[in-house]
Length: 427
Image (tube, rainbow, N blue to C red):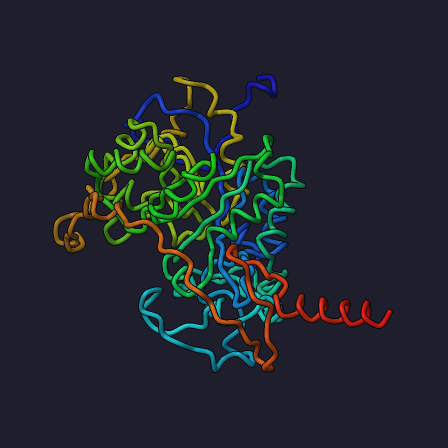
């Protein structure tokens, strides 16, 4: 058989249940989760470079604000999750903020950008409870980036389709004097994304009020993140989402519900969202076998294939972009009805149905439906006045303008004017 006719084998079993959803598009977007955070600490220069090298379509920046009003890329507003701050001189800054998260943390807005730059990144290991730790050789590699630095990296990568900017906790930050939405708009404008045509900008948030603000001021693609597992969505809720977003991010469990790591069924969430012309992106796809349901035979490629061909999703959000990019380059995907049997997706519930009654796991309550009350929010509050910040050594930090960026203090300007006036009187 000529090389261009070869269909690469995907390490799937030779026998596979029949496809349960036909006619899906072969287009599959690959979106990073904090860059290639499976290989390097998330949201660092090396993680983003690796994601671009691995063929990602969109690199993402979860925006957090620093004490001096600098928007930066960090996977969590809680620095303990991704840095060595708990072992640093700032470990005494632990506080509890119920509006953000249960328990205590050390938050990005309690440190200046110069202070955060001194912290060492830590690679995430979401499967550490199974003693699976990611890339120990590079577990502290890389440096963190401001949003502007991130946009520079993206702008210089011709292979990218664009960037995804994620904004969370905006109402709380605005009440504390941090204008996160304005800071993002300002950084995008200065990076040339207001006029850029070769790369797209996607703004993602679980807050409809954030997306409504961007809708009123920009033409960026808006992505609504559903931050819980759902079993369905009301028609009125889908209509609401469609009024301010063009895409939705949902969890894997919202497509194929699991019970004790067995897939029990398939929901109609994806078909109904797509019927409303909403693109559907699913998170988070990883390489560790413990992150996949038993139905996928401990193979991340089988999992991606089943969500793509079986679930009909439009894109994957992954911390291992190389795996997803390798999958979608498989020549078998372009053969229409002639796709070989070993590439047929897993049939939901088929493995669960083989469990004899005495060994069935306890039944679980179905995931809730997404309602209008879950989506509708009041407009964002105005930016609260913010007192001048003080660094840890007691020196005053530069005040911030309404967009969160440092500005020249009026007092300094007045001092300069006084000096010039005195000199002119002398002559």
